[in-house]
Image 1: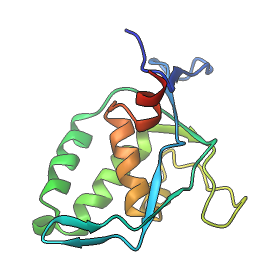
Image 2: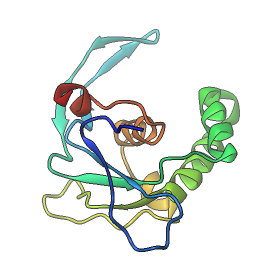
Image 3: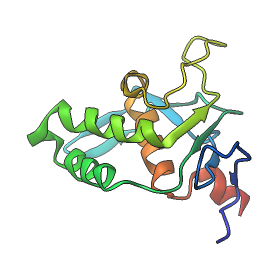
Length: 146
């Protein structure tokens, strides 16, 4: 299977039965001042590419628990924050490593592998980007490189 441009197989030790995939994070955008009314974006706000030059290594397969957590997030109004916590737990098992930095320039974020609290401290835009990348959806950077 051919990987989209912007995604590569990661050379790792023999710890992983399936090689992780590296996804470049250049197109992860955090919006400030976005206005949403009635489920519609009225003003996009200002876009900040907060992870340019950074990457995420993740296992390219989903567990059933992750799929169910994604479904729960779709109905988060009914399930509350617990569905997002569950999704962060499942996602933290697939994110092997990253070189992400925080909002303070140069502040290295802790590794998220098996630590859902790291993911819970991200912005909603960052988490949505990770969810899309983990589902194997083509990121904007991969589309531009195609």
